[in-house]
Amino acid sequence: MRIKYLIYLILLFLVSGCADSNRNSIAFGLNAAPVTLDPRFATDAVSYRITRLIYRSLIDFDEQFQVKPDLASWEQLALDHYRFTLGDEGREFHNDSRLTASDVKATYESVLNPETVSPHRASIEMIESMEVIDEDTLDFKLSRPDPLFPGRLVISILPAKLILEEHDFSRVPIGSGEMKIVEWKDDSRLKLIRLKDNQLIEFITLKDPTVRVLKLLRGEIDLIQGNLSPEVVTWLTERESVRVNKKQGDTFTYLGFNLEDEVTGNELVRRAIAYAIDRDSIIKYVMRNAARKAGAIFPPNHWAGNTELTGYEYDPEKAKTLLKQAGYSIGSPLKISYKTSSDPFRLRLATIIQDQLKTVGIDVDIRSYDWGTFYGDIKAGRFQMYSLSWVGLKMPDVFRYVFHSLSIPPNGANRGRFNNTEVDALIEKAELEPSLIKQAEYYRELQQILFDTLPAIPLWYEDNVVAMRNEIQGYTLSTDGNFDSLKYTVKK
Image 1 (tube, rainbow, N blue to C red):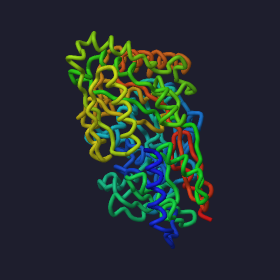
Image 2 (image 1 turned 180 degrees about the vertical axis):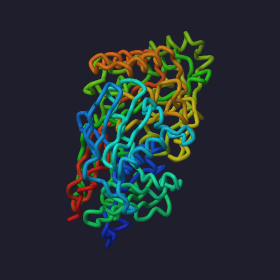
Image 3 (image 1 turned 135 degrees about the vertical axis):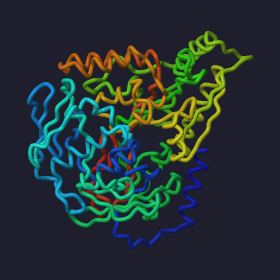
């Protein structure tokens, strides 16, 4: 199968010939278009990565998951009182207005407003009040002490005047980042311009990975990142016109379940599925070791990670025993639907998981959809089982966002409708703990409970891979796979 695919790719490339492109842009091939460019609502990976180029936030994180200043520095005046002072960088919006503390306040008031229905509201619900001291200074008063509070202020800042005017930031973003929008007529092509040198950056949506690779080889696009099969990555490393870079990543891939469903709401069923998946073989033979086994949402090197969790080891006999306990047998097999995107590699992984589950007596019906339909179904809870990945996770507030019972969409990302009073209480207890050391202990305990109850099955942390033409210089991979280095990338 692999040989046939590569022969097809080569022949198609030879037939197509080499395109003569007079582009003055740096073209980035995407597997899916961004859903929204409004940071108050962005939750998908592509939207998150592109909004980082257009907007600026009060804070950011380094590669060690530690918070650092972006627009502002801060000081803690009391356990429940923080003062943020804006610096000189990133203070001019793309409509030529100046970014001030009033814009910061308006942005966070908008997210906190229940009528806005921002999925990020729960992560900052401890903000009790905000006071503008002057145009450079803003005070946050909290309803409870929160030593992690600065790290929660990652939502990008919007102009207050446009918020009041209900401007459509989703399609016409106005930020203060290094790039601003030029054109986004449809989802196939988004054009940004880099302000420091007027370099045009194009994001071109090409859902078929074969088409992305061909256009890269023809010079019609300059970079593609992720969503490529290991065979194609290996093949690309042998092409003279491109080079491939890899970096260990923290993109967390998992199987999610609808816990309100009669079948997938059964913990015995979820545990059986976990034991039936041979992750070692998938990582070694299918992913070519471009991933690490995961046992929790955070990798072990995260300050809140649990080093003792590596996931459920492959044990098909134990899976069969659990299915029997759940009331299933050869004569009465478990049947389950599995939703995934139409991306060929994701569909391939789903097919392998389908085959592995079949060996223990689980009949899986795979249903693949284009990204927009698939993601919409997941957010709406229209699934039994699905696979997805989380990118850019830095803060343990993700536990409230994903697992607290109050975070069911649209109030958060508890898409599986998980409801566990012990988990809710531990999340709230950790958030109130002033000691970071003790807080980390609570989060490790929390991850153990999630491991035992399995609202989702941790699969692996995926590495990041980029293939780029040799003319492209300065593009480097980050741990979370963001596109930030496009701020410095040049085309020789």
